[in-house]
Amino acid sequence: MLLILNCLITEKSVNDFNKAMAKHLEDLPIEYDIFRVRDVKSIPDLSKYTHLIISGSGASTLDDNSWDEDLKNIILYFVNNNKAILGICYGHQFLVKTLLGVEHIRKTANPEIGFTKIDIADNELFRGIDVPICCVAHYDEVFDLNEDFRIIAKNRNCSVHAFQYKDLPIWGTQFHPEYGVKDVEDMIDEFSKKDPNFNEHFINELDNEDKLLQNKLIFRNFINSSKIHLRPHHLLCIQSYIGKGYSEEFVENMDIVVGSLRKDKDQIIRIIEGNDHVCKHCPHNIDGAKCESNDKVITMDKKVLEHLEIAPGEYTYSYLLDRLKEKLTEEAFQDICGDCEWYELCH
Image (tube, rainbow, N blue to C red):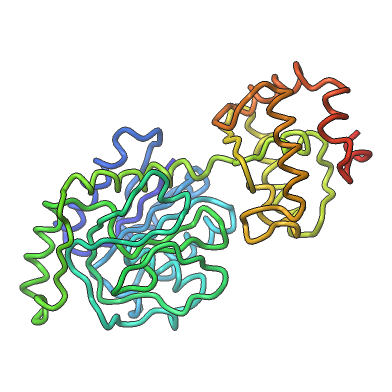
């Protein structure tokens, strides 16, 4: 279930955001609740939520606001429980304020209001998106992030238009993927009355309104991000896992992955090529992209796919367990895992 925290101030902007989110979420497979950030104390039970979205705001993250401590605690709860977070504009900045410090937020030298092209990196959040154009409306920005934050989007005015935190399902976007043309027209009218330098800050790089339709994929990708990703041979590793591993961090992460799978065998698993959730804290993980023994593990992965007669894609964990039970003979296990350093322990 998705928790949305609306941090906007005026009733019109609050309602406009709620309507925009309802449109993006209407055909996604998730239920959601929306709370005003000022009312977060009334949220009865955080444990039922798997995802969190934090909106933009007319407030500044450089100021102290009445909801700061409550919002910080909610963010830390989601981070500590390995749950997904998407911060938008103010939410993007507040994530940095919580996880790194307010000293990494500043007034921007180049405020942006309107629509701008965003340069994006290859990232799960942007899967299926090509040369995005998004709404922007900000006078503050984050900067000088440490190695825990991977910058995944920028443009000529803003060097951190999006980040991912520690390769977790935690993202911030300075731009607004939720707003369309009508929303921005109203926003432009509001900003033009308040900002004496509005003409200097206004940007309109939108040459085709249809380009905005793909921004909906950001929300779809975010909702799907909580699915556990496994490379094929890790299906076998999980079955024999008894709390041993390469390092303390690796074991802690493995405990989370294995615990989740054993608790809910009907959850959707994404079988992928390359590094997965198990690899996340492995000392043999090279920059989140490949394994030190890449050729060896790729060969193991291919053998698992062949023996189980499956392909990369999404399956229920219970289905994969059935495939293992049906197809994983002693000979197949030897063929796949015979050269692995953990073979004797698993066998």
